[in-house]
Length: 150
Image (cartoon, rainbow, N blue to C red):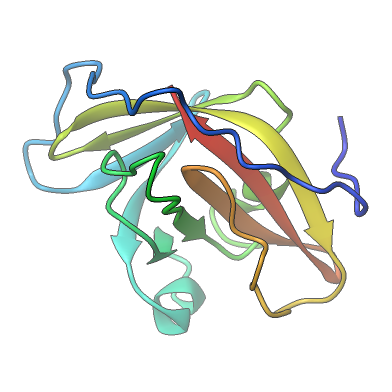
């Protein structure tokens, strides 16, 4: 399924925040995202970290695994489409599972929608949804995949 530029994502809150994890924890304090057999370390940072093309960058929001469905807080992880496979962030099919292994445990997220916004570097106001938003450019546009923690 390809992203639709007219898609309007809706928040998909859980009935109650899920405290369970899959058990595995990062022993070295790092966070790793996994999508199928692809993975990348996640670091907090801004445009300089994104431009370094070394890691997925948590741009804003709470630490992965600490989202609260009632507080409407969204973690946002970004990467340039030409670096390390981050192009997949903008085009994940609905239903795709993403895991985040953190110092607090391993958490599972599922894609429930995606959206492509015209232009690169466009204002992000109103474009971050769910528990986790993954963002990358798609050609001349900016794409977003929206995930809810299971």
